[in-house]
Amino acid sequence: MATTPVDYFVRPTNGDNSNDGLSHANAWQTTQYALDNITRDASSGDRINVCSEATDDITATLDSSTYGSTASIAAPLIIQGYTTSPQDGGIGAIDGGGSAASIWDDSTFQGIHFYDMTLSGCTSTGIRPYHYSAVINCTLEDIGAHGIFSTGKYNTHAFNKVNCVGVYGIYGDQANHILNNYVEVSGTGGYGIRQAGGNCCAMYNTVVMTHASVVAGLDVSPLGSTAICNSIYHSGSPSGSGCRCLYFSQGIVAGNLIEGFATGVEKGSADTYTMVRNNAAYNCTTPFDGAEEDFWLSPVPLADFDNQTLAASPFRDAASGDFRPTVQSMSLGGWPTQLPNVGTLTRYYKGAIQPGGSPIIGGARRGGRAA
Picture 1: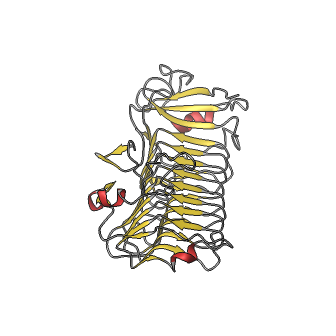
Picture 2 (picture 1 turned 180 degrees about the vertical axis):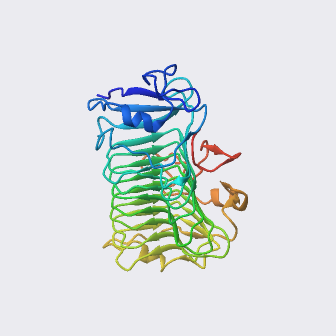
Picture 3 (picture 1 turned 45 degrees about the horizontal axis):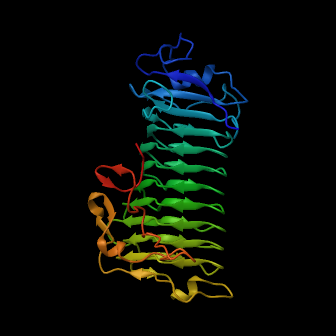
C-alpha cells in the first residue's frame, strides 16, 4: 500500500532557514538546507517541495550526505515543484549558475525522484540517478554535457524536455523506461537516447540531433529492448544512425519516423530474434541496413515488414521544431492494422505524436514536458 511522504517546503524568495520547513508559510530558503536538516523517514520517504516563486540558485552539486546514504523504493526522496501546495502543478527551479557541475550526481543513491522541475546551469551532467529513480515532467537546459545519465536499473524518465551539448541526452541502463520525452543534443559524437542495458523501452520520444557528426539518435542495442513510435531527426547533411541496433536480441524496432541520418536503421551482425518493421525513413543515405528479410533473424522469418523509404519529410516543419507527422507519413498504415479476432482498427501511427493527444510545447505537439 502506497504511503504519503513527509513534506518539507523550500521558497527561494520568501523562505527562511530559521523556520521549521514544514509548511508553505514556514518554508526554508534552499534545497540544500533541506537536505542538510531533514531526518530521513525510512518508512514513507520525504518530499522537498520547491516553490515556483523563484529559482533556487546553487553553486555546487546538491549534497545528500547529511540526509543519508540512500532512499528506497518504498521510502523515496522526492524533489518536486509546487506553487502553494504539494503536487499542485507548480514548476520549481534549481540553477547551477554555470559553476555547479551537476544538479544531482550520485551513482549509489537509490530512490531519488525529480518531478515538475526546471534544472539548469550545469557544467557537466544535469542529473545522475541510480536504481529505482525517476525524472518526470522536468526541463533540463543549459547543460554542459549529458542531460539525464542514469547509471542504475529500473528507472523511469518520462515527459521531460532535455537540451544538452554533451554526448547523451538521456542515458539508461537495464530496465529503464524512457517515454514521451523531447530530447535535443548538440554535442559531437552524441546520442539522443541510449539504452545501454537490457529490457529497456523507448516509446513516443522526439529526438533531435543538431551537430554535424553524431553516433545515433536512438541506440537500442541490448537484449529484450524496444524502440516503438519515436520521431528521430538530424539536421544538416546525413550523419550517424537514426536507430542503432547493434548486439540486439529479442527486441522490436517498429513505427519510428527517421530523417537525416547516414543509416536510418542500423543492425549488427550479432542481431538475433529481432523484428524491425513498419518504420519510415527520409533523407537517409542507407534507409535500412541490409535486406528486409535480414531484420527477423529467427527460424521462422516474417515475410512482410513494411519498412518505408519516403520521398518527402515525415514531419510538418522539422527545421522550425514542428514534428507533427505529415499526411503522407500518417497515411502509412501501422502494424497490426486491426486487433486480432476483433477487426477493430488500431489507429496506430508512426512517430511520437499520435492522433488525439500529445503534450504541447512551443505551439507544436512534439512530446516533452506535460505542463
